[in-house]
Amino acid sequence: MLIFMLKIIFFKFPKKEKPDLIYASSPHLFAALGALIQAKRNKCKFVLEVRDLWPETFVQIGVIKRNGIIHKFFLIIEKYLYKNADKIVNLDPFFDYMVNLGISREKMIFLSNGVDLEEFDKKQNLEINLDKSKFNITYTGAIGIANNLEPIIDLAKLVSDKNIMFNIVGYGPLKKSLAERVENENIKNIKFYDPIEKDKVPEVLRQSDALILSVLPIDLYQYGASFNKLFEYWASSKPILFFGNIKPDYIKESNSGISVTTNSIDDLKNACLDLYNMSEVDRLELGKNGRKYVEDNFDWKNLVNKVDKVFDELLQGEIKNV
Image (cartoon, one colour):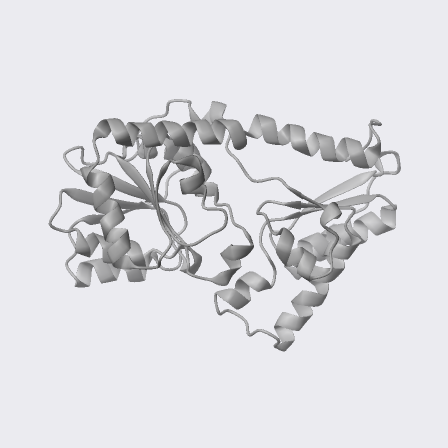
């Protein structure tokens, strides 16, 4: 992280290509800090895109201790970035969190991630063939602490007497231990697949009968959250089973599936069986609702226009280097 920051700091723009605006994303704070230093050196506007809350996310999942030295260090950098940004683009609605840090609400805008529907709808060759004789519930994505896949395995055990197959497609640090748990507990209705190219994901989703997403029961999501998987799930026109308590409740808001907010595995089981026993017509309707929701709110074409508007406001409509 530090090496990457130093590369940003010491990068020299050609004299004729000095930036008028620097747009920095924050996969980590050091990258954004390097970009801010560049902006100050070049005396240009600085827009900060916030993907995750550093260091709050790591406090919530137990990686670092609140009010410890590391937490305080990152908190200083975080506040410095927010206060010195000309505009803050939140990919999740983190407004309350930032206001509590003393940041002006007027400085912030919400610009969620989204999906390129034109690319998503292109047909691709199948890399994974799901068992069509089963009711397939699928998860695609990373397999780590934040992805909270243990409840999906618990759910699979509870509905093992039904014709339901859970498919987990992806890779991450917990994949091995989860797969070992499935084998040790002789859980037959869950399969793990290797990760596939992003452009192949839509075909797997479209083969499924329903899609599942589980998030950690942490307070962080009360500040707001959005998940890249959801955009692809909606785009696939499939009903969604969501396990977690977040604001806003996108599944309820879009009427695109069933959300379980109680952190109860029994409630998750009941919701799963509701989807399983639902008529195909009703499941199709939920899927259509999700597709319309993503078309109206999270199509990349519309989101790009919002970014352009931010740049125009900061640069007063002039042709500039960004």
